[in-house]
Each structure stands twice: as C-alpha cells, then as structure tokens.
Amino acid sequence: MALHDSQSITLLQQWAANASESQFNALSGAVGGFTSGVVTCPLDVIKTKLQAQGGFLTVAKGRHVGHHKVYEGLLGTGRVIWREEGIRGMYRGLGPIVMGYLPTWAVWFTVYNKSKAWLAEHNMQNTFVINFYSSIVAGASSTVVTNPIWVIKTRLMSQSSKGSNEKVSLFPRSGNTPTSRPPINSPWHYNSTLDAARKMYSSEGIMSFYSGLTPALLGLTHVAVQFPAYEFLRKKFTGQSMGEMNDDHGHWLGVLSASMMSKILASSATYPHEVIRTRLQTQRRPTPGAEFLQGLGISSTASNGKSTGTGNHGIPEPKYRGVGMTFRTILREEGWRAFYAGMGVNMMRAVPAATVTMMTYEFVMKKLHHEKLEGQRKMALGAVTAL
Image (cartoon, rainbow, N blue to C red; front, side, top):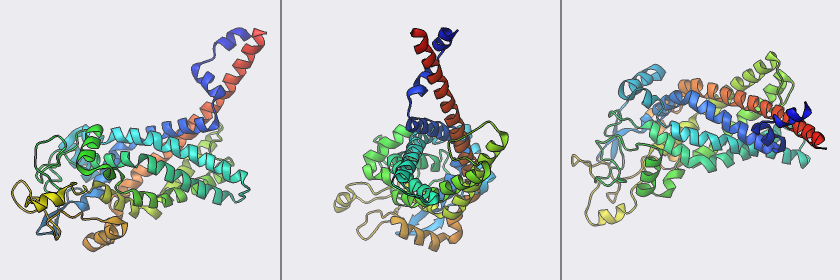
C-alpha cells in the first residue's frame, strides 16, 4: 500500500515538495494577476478610454482649441465600444494585460514577502512599518520591470478602430512605411501587442516604453496604502497573516472583506496619479529627426494640409511634459473633476480585480502548501519502502 501511495505522487506534488516559499509566492501571484486581468479586462478598457479622452484635443495654430468628448460613463462608454468594435474591442489590450500581470504580481509578491522577512531579521519590530516599506520596494521593482507592457496596453485600449479619436493625433507623420505614424485622419494605428512595440520603438525610440514611469512610481503610494491596510484588516477579521488559510467560511469572508476595503481606501486616496500617468502614456513622442526635417523646410502637417500645432521652430510640441505640467494643464483646461475621470468605473474594475487577485493568491498558496505536505509525505513513504 505504501509503495502504491508513493508511486501516485503527482508532478505538482513532486515540484511543491522541493519548492521554496519564494517560488510559491511567484506562482500564486502570477495566477492571481492573470485571473483578475482576464475577468476585469472590459472594465479596464472602459476606464482607460475615460481617462485618456481629455488628452484628445484638436489643434490649430499651435493652440489646443477643442475637446472631442466621445465617452460618457460606464454604460455609455461600453455601448460605444460594443457598437464600434464588438466583443473584440471590450478585450482590446488583453495580450499585454496577461503579459503584464503575470510578471507584475509574480515579482510583487516575491519581493514583498522577501522584504518583510529581511526587515524582520534586521530587528524591525513595527509590523505596519515593515508592511509599508515592503510594499514600496515590491511596487518599485514590479513597476520598473513591467512599465513597457503597461504603456503598450494603455495605447491599445485608448485607440478606436471606427474613428472615435479622429483628428486627435498630436504627432502625425505621413507615409506608408509599416512603422510610420498615422496621419491625423487615421485614428487606428496599433494592430497587436507586438505591432505596437515595433512601431513605438521604430518611430519614437526606447524611451517611449517608459512614458509615465514617474507617475507610475508616484503610484507606489497606492500599494503603500493598500497592502498595509489589507494585512491589518485581514489580521483583524481572520486572526491570520497573508498566505495563511483554512477552510472556514468565515475566514474566506474575512479575506474578501479585507481585500475590498483596502482597495477602496487606496483607490480613493491615490486615483489622480492614474489619470496623469494615462495622459503621459497615450501621448506620442516627437519623431526623432524632426528638427532636421524642419531645417529642410518639411513641415509637419495633416493629410489635409493643415497645421497640427507646432512650437517656435515648427516642431510638434508634446501637450504634456512631466507630472507637474500635466497636472497644471489638466486643471486649467478641464478642471479638478478631470482627475477623477473614470473613477467610478475604476472602482468597479479595481475592487473586483484586487479581490480576485488576493482570493486567488490566497487559494493557490493554500493549495501549494497542501501539495507540498502531501508530496513530502509520499516521498518519505517511498524512501521507507525502498529500504
């Protein structure tokens, strides 16, 4: 019987028996992020369009003079996307979401738990301070690693295939080469994740992948609020720390409540930075060599011959430059309410996403620890039988 039991060990049990806690955290975080990304992708698309549309201003004689407002609210935006693009439009950007959430949460949970252990080993006593600093370090690590993926995701989600963003490109470039920028009357530009990466690199350079990195790093205040709050609430509701689970229904309810409440608190406190980050990410960078072309007398014009808005030297100027200028520009042109554009949708997306992520993470961690014990037990029985 013991021999049969040892031979029935599964591949998962075999792996888990020798795996480290860091590997458990990485796998659980990746599965949690992937699951929440797939479930909440349509709401992410709607939120991104609401955040980005304020940046789509028509340009004349170097001045931004109009606001082409297309999307209104959760249902209104959903109807526009469904009517123009169908189900595919609702999942626009799913590729980079999957590519992004897998490493984001794998890195985040691994670094977070490693940091907590390191701080505890160095005689840090205050649990809140440990969780706060660990969330900052983990957030910075995952942000730097995955920022290019999120820039691509944001650009894919904010464009429209049917012309909702017509006449909004601030830096058009005529021509039919595969990597050329679209003319001002061609709102659709990126066909896929790889296509977007290729065109961004060819026409805007490597730095385009790090657009919005500064506000993204400022967004570390979000996780600095969310995870210490989650750990505090989870301990209050369940009596156990993150990653420790049992089968009691009240325990799972406590985890669910802690996930929702911590996310609502963090999102409410730090939402404006997301709008600033989205505006910086969706803005295309000036074409390298534009100064040389202007020196030759080649102007940047739309396909209809009208100027697209230029600086003192006839070179297209970015509307947003840095976090401070972006903040002032949005406040001046659209008012303080613009900093909360799409916040309702964000709550409807972020809260379920955080809940799915944390519940999945906790469940997978519980499953892996169970499989580890089973694997070790069966391997021990096998060793005894072999004797």
